[in-house]
Structures are given as structure tokens and as C-alpha cells.
Length: 480
Image (cartoon, rainbow, N blue to C red; front, side):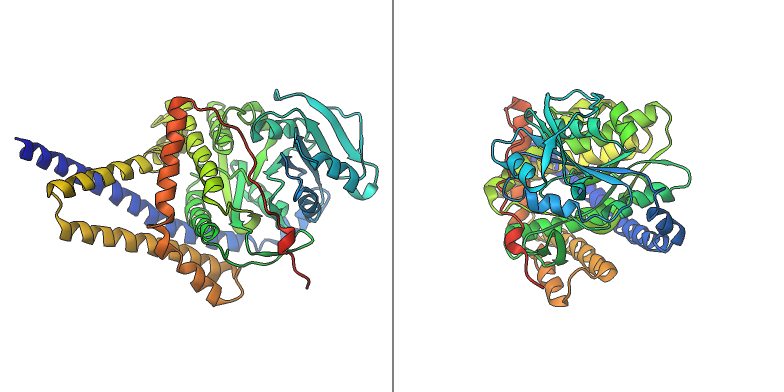
């Protein structure tokens, strides 16, 4: 009887795993195809002279750049200067000092000649109290505003304060430790202007890892694959997620979220959706979900678009401890999101969000670490009991390994062939070698930290925004 039970259990598990894996691998193949079509379409639209002319005129839509900062004294001056290199006719920069306990604010006041001002601060989204608002006495820094507020224990609370102070109809949310391409605002607003029928409520773009890249006065001058293994794994993951994943989803208007590191948003829809949720550990995905929900509830024919160009470089964690803290928070945020908005799951009233995006995130993002962990336990148990068909199991493992390496390599090569970010093919080959190790080193870490994030969600463990302990870009700048 025990043997029959285990045989039945094994058959059910293997059939379920096969269906789960086949759907997932098929989805990746479709996304790869969709990505190629979307990138080609983007390149074709980029040839429009009318849009380029408008973007260089005073009639261009105004954009507010929001950069929350908490204890970023090591890099804050360097990175705010980087934001000032953006090329766009109508924009402002709002840096939100979220109760830093280091000398971030003092450095800003001294470097940019800031003085307190009377400011028409309209509280559309509740936040922790704002202490003072600063503007520069030097006309050279007229586009800069600095908000000093009580710490809200989350990036969300800081960004909401920036939204309250924003002058323009669109805002770009980034991190003060990020380096942006000088044409970031032009590229992000283009999908808004090129969309003929739908209201584009958000636009995202590709993020890359800044580690080992070269910068000069806040401008990226030379892209290089990260030398350290952990950041290099993250570089590969980002290329796959943005170039292949989100560009593929963009083609069918099913972008699951816009990264918190760089995204342009429709301010009116964001405010009416309630702004960022300060209690969420995945505030970027949570806001995107609520904006889609608001648009659907109010019969707004909306779209979310992605730009395949790399417009933002962010410093990746170099230690497993900091990396684990980041990924645990992301996983906890995903679990929070699924729990808070589960009424959208397979709900046709929410269109693609309810019928495609939400189910995909539930089955292949939220459940994936659980399925893998259960699978490992199942096969260890089966191996001990002698129930594993090893030739078939090893063949299946080889297929999955080869497929995952192929998909990642395809994303890297497609990105390089299209945009030529790396100067030498030696660097591309160096990066392409990284996926060969991903399944054995990096992926187990992702699974472990995801499960830890789910555990923290279920147990209600207290956590906070925290400090990523940046090393900074200044040391990487080189003379040219």
C-alpha cells in the first residue's frame, strides 16, 4: 500500500511539475519573440522627427524628477550633480531627505547654496511631517528643490512627499544613488506622446549594474560587466528581466511592474490611486497595481510601456548579507501585493491585469520558489527510497539547464547586437559565461531569500527601509 501511495504521489507531482515547467518555458519563448518585435518597433518609432522636435521645445510635457535619500552622504552630491546633467526643456529635481542621520542634508545645503523658503506644499497624499523646504540662492541650481522631512521608515513615504511638491503632470521616480542617462526624460516621455489611443500611465526602462562601469562628472563613459561575481549575476538577471521579459510584456500591454529605480508616472492617476503605500515592501509594484486598478475601475483605456535602452545604472549589493536583505524585502513585498489585491486574480473586470499579469505573478513569481523547494525535498525523499528514475531525471535536468542558459544568452546577445553597449566582444563572452554558473550558485540564493521573505510576511516580522551601505561611483570615475 505504501509503495502504491508513493507511486501515485510521484506520478501526480511529476505530471504537475511537467505542466508547470512546460507553461513557464513556453512563456519565456513567447516573451523572447515578443521582445524582438517590440525592440524593432521601438527602433522604428525612434526615427520620428516630429517627436524629437517637440521634445526639444518649451511645449514638451513637464517632468518632476523625485529622488528620495536616506543616509546617502557618501554619494549624494555627486549623484545630484548627475541629475542636473539631464537634457530636457521642462523639468525640476526634488530631492527628499528622509530624516537622514548622517550629514546628507548639510552637504546639500553647502554644495548647492540652499536656503529655507516658503513653499506652497499641498498635501494630496499624507506623509510624515515636512520640516523645511530648501531652494538654492544660486540661479545655476534653480531647478533643484530639497525637502527635509521626518523619517517615514520607507522609501514610499519619502516619494509621496515629493509627489505633493511636484509642479508637473508627470514625475520620474529614481533613487539618489542611481546614475541616469542624459536623455532619460526624453526617452521615457516618448511612449506617452507616441501612443495614439491609450493613456500611458507609466513608462519604464532598462536598468543596469553600475559596478565596474566608468563615470565622469555623473555621466557614464564606459560600460563594463561587473568584475565581482555577485554583481555580475545581477547584471545578467537584469538584462534577462528587462530586455527579454518586460519588453516582451510591453508588446501586449501586460507589463507587470515598473522598477522603483527608474519609472515615469502619470501624477494625476498616481495621486488618485493613493500614492505609494508606505507599509509595502514592494512599493513600486504595489503602486503600479493600484494605478491599473484605478484605471480599470474608472474605464480609462490605459497602457504601460517599456523602453529597451539602458537609461539608469544602479549600484548592486556586493555582499551576500546586503543582497539577501534586498531580495528578502522584494519577496515579502510580492507576498503582500498578492494578499492585498487577490480579488483581481482571474477577474475579467480588470482586463489583462486580472487575467494575465496577476495569474502569471502568482503562479510563476510567487509560487516558483515554493515549487522548487518542494521539488528538492521530493527528489531527496525519492532518492532515499529508491523511487527516482535517474536517467530520465538527469535528462530533464540537463534540458532545463540548457534552456535557461540559452534564454539568458539570447537576451545578452540581442541587447548587445541592438545597442552595442560593450566595446569588445570579449566582455560580452565574459558575461555570457555567467549563466553557466547561475543555476548552481545564484539561483539557490534567490530561492532561499524568497522563502525567507515569505516567512517574514507570514510571521509579521518587523523590518525597515535600511541602508544599502553604498561604496559610491566616485572611486570608479576615470580621467579621459
